[in-house]
Image (cartoon, rainbow, N blue to C red; front, side, top):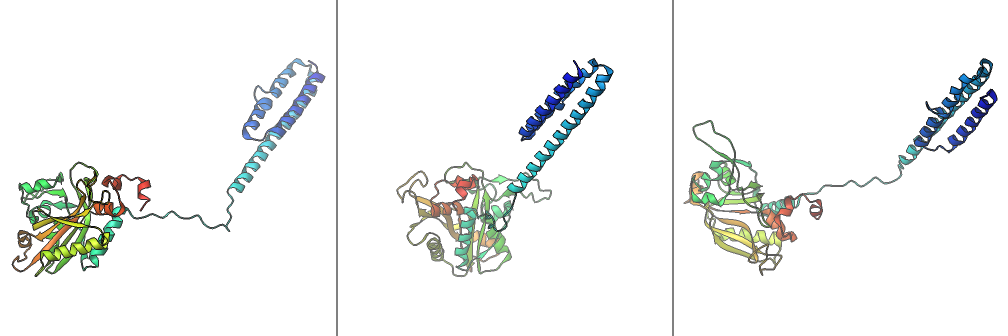
Length: 351
């Protein structure tokens, strides 16, 4: 190895480095260039290792040339890194550029749940007939949920409601028990305890029952309770009120059916059904017999009136309770109540 040969190799390395640097357009190519020319085992390092084989005089000449080439290559690397950084910054500025003359992006608006919409429609219908709106607690005392509604402890009528009891022990001698309310009817007693007749009120709210779910039943759902108490109220007032409600919600063409039914807190009791939208009264998996029950109703039982201090010889009243989910099913042609709580956005976006 001579000085002339080593210098020629350094010159060739410089030309190769300049040519490859011109073709390095990204960070990966730039790193490969650095490893090839300036790495610990790169071409420049291998040439500089040959300096030891030269004489002292030749080593000075070749060493100076090697240092010059090293500085040149390091300068090329710094220049390439700077150019790449500038290109990246320019590209980011271009991609992130905002045209302030463009219209703003539309904001996605939320919407009310279909059950909430139905509850509000029900409340509006009864508010137009002079009813007030009240709300009550979802965690309720046994007294209001059962005892005040003519359903004493151990009475077989309690089997009609699959109750979810609260795991709580009353420290007082009364031995009170709490539960998740099985209906909104407890508000009948609460309201009548605090108000004197006349009373006209509806109570929307969520209720809970420990029962199996299917196309018509859920373990948690909404109810709207209604109560009217005054002198001279008859069963005809009950039917007229509910007929008017049906016309306001479903229109004049939907058929309505009343049948005798039993509820401990009313006497007599009825259930009100609407003809099935799916089979038009012929019978299907949704309705069974062509009708879908939407509420129970009846005249307030005298024992309930006595329990809140009303004289049943003076005052009479009617009460009713309906399921907004079933009404929404009738209005919108929904064949399974479980759709309401499946949180499927494809379903919810339809309302």
